[in-house]
Amino acid sequence: MAAPQISPSILSADFARLADDVAAISGAADWVHVDVMDNHFVPNLTLGLPVVQALLKHSALPLDCHLMIEDPDRWAPQYAEAGAGSVTIHAEAAKAPIRTLRAIRAAGARAGLGINPATPVEPYEDLLGEIDMLLLMTVEPGFGGQKFLDVVLPKVRRARQMIKGRDLNVWLQVDGGVSAETIERCAEAGADVFVAGSAVYGADDPADAVRRLRAQAERAAPAG
Image 1: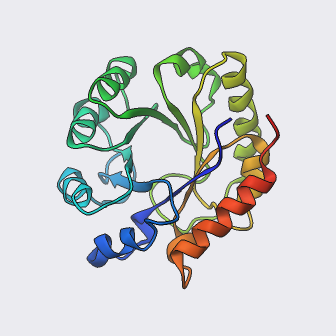
Image 2 (image 1 turned 60 degrees about the horizontal axis):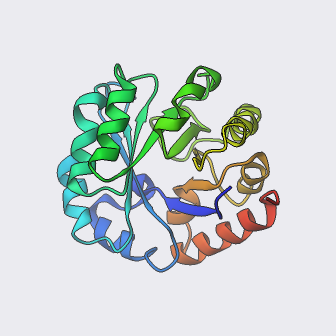
């Protein structure tokens, strides 16, 4: 497992002050998690490639772009080409996942595969060699501020065992309802990258919230 990393989600930031809100976490976080939603794959519309291109000019942190969109095969490589550090596509949306994941890597970004709460992880075991990160949603995708779904924790444990069993350096990310109340359970289950939105941007001091979450994850992470 990698050392715990925190990827605050700007879905919970002030969209009118994105550059400032990203700067507020730049000394504490590892990534900036960017939720791209198209109002088709999920029932919400957020932001897209032009905003990511603008943010890249102002962010000292790499962008972790999470594409919750209907046609990731078409769009994902463009996010990597723009300079995103990581681009995640959803298993439920991709029609040619291997080709798209390879295109993301070829453009210089880390390739991620996202899986919704009700989607089993086992059918995607053979794709682990094609990815740098597996994202398990711990809420139904679409909106920030949702309640964490404990039902996903056994899947996190199984995914960690799958990764260990294949001797791969694949990060295991959880996204949704991650907070001071839930992050230790996620870390104990084997997650090592944590997306936190409301828990960071709802705090008076977002950078301090990131540091506290990291300390909790480090305490709870299994040895080895």
